[in-house]
Length: 636
Image 1: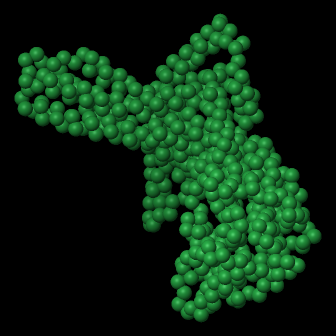
Image 2: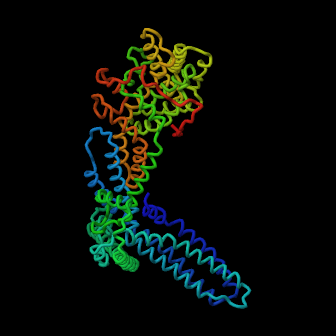
Image 3: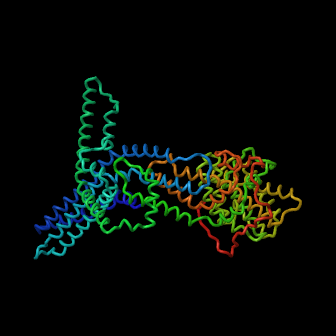
């Protein structure tokens, strides 16, 4: 978040600092009361006690009044910001075709970041005159306590000479802590907008009260209230009374807003004076000729995104400093995410030149074992293939550890894609099953509590290992069929995982049996790794749509949009090189909605799938267990 947003979120939520200050003052006012009623009536101490009580009441009054004034404008503020967000969303949208251009996605992420940051109601209220006025009052209270402390003198011959200083000092500390949040609110609010002639004139007109301050009361006046009051005359009296009460509330609200505007004129006028003095100083010493290169680049970029800043008042232009800080924060976030790129995954994806693997992982000739067919998901298929590679890895150069390092990085992105598109209940169950299986494969090198490397250690051939995996999967499916009382959380996920293992392992056995000679372990592993790379590439073709859905986030509350855009920016930064790889690929003839599902890819005719590299080319160079492997724990 950029600078002002931090201030708005931390110091606008003032309950912590002000509560601490109030607690300190209450404790020491109690001690001071005990001292006063003990008969040692020091006039200076009693005076300080009186003013401390006034400060305590003032802080509590500030908290209650500022909250009540602002509570009535939050709904109106939300509606205005939501309306302007939808207007700008129409300008920021782009066509539905799939594009792997990082620059275009980055441009759209920045636009929605500006809209999300400035479209938060908390941000808008923190910029209002109410926040500025009550912050200024809090600062005055603190200054008054300092003056009282400075002029305080203890009684020369009092037995409580030392304790008086301690009590007064700690009470002043309470004043200081309680005034931290108001002071920051005042400073943030008066620095929120760009100082212009039009803006200054409008804010000098303190009697101009914007519509959103009283919109909630006006809505209540127009609303029909159901009542069980008998008689027409009684109902007339009721509605007249209601309107009179609401008119009084409107008048009080207008009066409070005018008073707040009047109070806020003091710090605002002071800031206007300082700004003009600073402007003339820059002209005199010619600072304008000395332009910072990085800041000038950000300013030129800011001109492009300035139109996507959401504002309650059209006349008030957001401060350039705040806008630039917002842009700097998203640039920093993208840069940081790019440094966390999935290096092992990218190494795997570069070895794939097509999407042939989406056809090869499942053979339609494999008969189903159960009438209840399970749906395939991207994560379940690649996790099942990874388990097979781990089971075979000890028979040839041990590629298993390198693949697991790739899958740690890849499944994190796959999970984002599936959560955006696979909302079907069956696909959700498949995704959950894949996550549970992956935990066993990654941590324990097991598949459904079966040691994957057991047969490899026994020097079994690749054919024997595949048959062993297939047979164990068949046993689990048959056990599921025969079980009448099924535990939903346990047996069903085992059935989903076993069904996938059965079909994939049987498909591999059929493929190898159709060859003239059974492939060597090295070639078999290479074929499987290329298949996984092809499937991941096909899955990652949904990245542009996933990122778009994350930063557009129509279904989220207006306060949650910032986190959604931040997640989209992080995913975009990590996926930059993946998008560059996909940008060179020829996509098959498949509609955009079907691209999100591996089953739709698998149904494509073989002629429409671009071919990958030949089996004997592009040997995969995975890191061996003795080499350093970049591992990112994603908790899938």
